[in-house]
Length: 453
Image 1 (cartoon, rainbow, N blue to C red):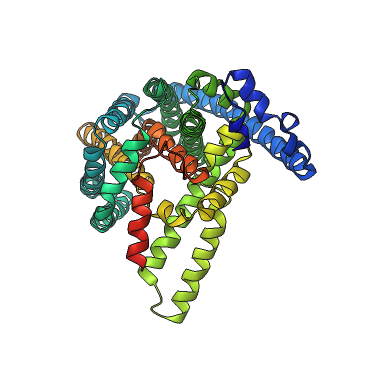
Image 2 (cartoon, rainbow, N blue to C red):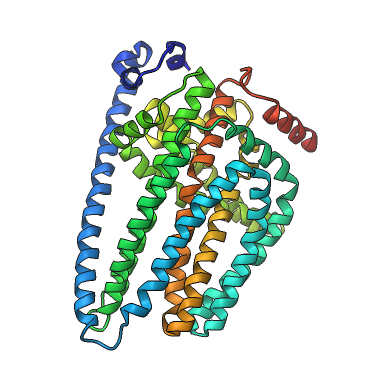
């Protein structure tokens, strides 16, 4: 908090100066901080280069595949571009519309948005599962069964956490009550960029499909393109996370109104490496942590072997969450920390003030995830139904690609509300006595303590 005590008016130059260790007397005296900063800076540069290099290589790969695919498709009867591309391109546009509309609905009426996400997601996932089963291929049947089981799990989860809806709505409402300026504009711009990028990658996937009879590397090409889709969409989402959470944090912690454009410029110029690292770590750590917690709920201590496995999973998950969590993006933006250090520091703060359990029970992440699943299911249904009518053999793969695009697009649209919630938690944890915060968190903590008594 020392950085905030010297702020009366924050300009872009002052923010950058506060990032430099030489302008902070306390940090400059700590040699370990200098070494850590140098190491973090080096790792950040490496990942920044890797990210941009990967974009360059993907651009070359996709362009080559698209050109070769169009050439071979004109002389082949194994691939029909006019029947393969339109469903995916339409679903990509649909994903963009749903993504922007949903974040607008969330901003206007968070209560209905939360309830709708928890109930629409299992229904739409079930409909998607029925679609895959109807297609009838071996792969579609497998995907359909997974979708139906997932829909059942989502329904049970929604019933289980329904008592927490009220608090989820309150924390979301208070966090986005005064959003940073141009938040929705940034979301719209990001979604527009994502639409163009997804259309570009779709062309590459289509090109790979067109030449599958001439090479055995088609599956590898498609896998590489899908991995690029995931990393890039996560990167775009986390750029918004860092930018918006920084602006929101500055306002909550120091009463400073920071220009969102300046924060975005700083994020892109100085924090690309940390954001790239976080975009890889957070999805894997969150997935493993979710698996560990699910195993804990299902397995419990029913027998000694299961209990030992659950304890092992939970121990690893507890260690990993300190190395990478979405709340770390707040300190990445505010203090220019490396992502792992920022994640560790924010988690230590939560533990120190007794917020860890509250953070674990927070539904913001689940709300955003289920919203993404619902959007993905919508896009999958749109492209799948079109493909069944036009060319059923394409329906399975097209529906899967459409689901991924829809999911990532919606998560991108929901980045700024999630960033506001993260900033609110971190700012509150650093100064719980501040009069800027209402009774939302203290009341919830009291309820949790009573339930455990």
